[in-house]
Image (cartoon, rainbow, N blue to C red; front, top):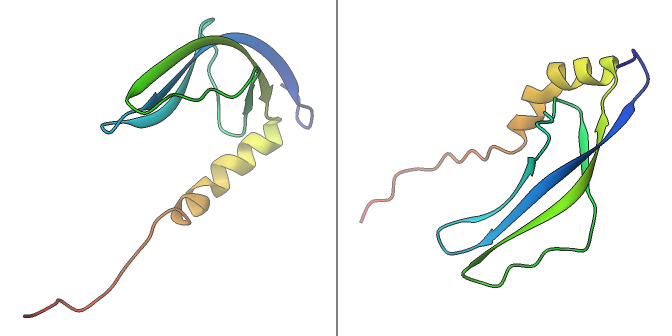
Length: 98
């Protein structure tokens, strides 16, 4: 990992897409034990996976991991908390009385 350069790595992965009432999710698990760090990007190759309602679909794919440079990784760690706050929704309202 260079100070300003990015590196690419190819990894086999398993993609699980769930479209159930209890759980709506998509997970990628790297079969070679690769770990994604802050600032890294992952691109899973292949056609879109559509799971019908009530089912879980699992497929083996290949993914390209673009590793962040040292500067990008540091920047992501420093500013990550601020970006998380954008996901939070705060509401202040008076209590309703009947």
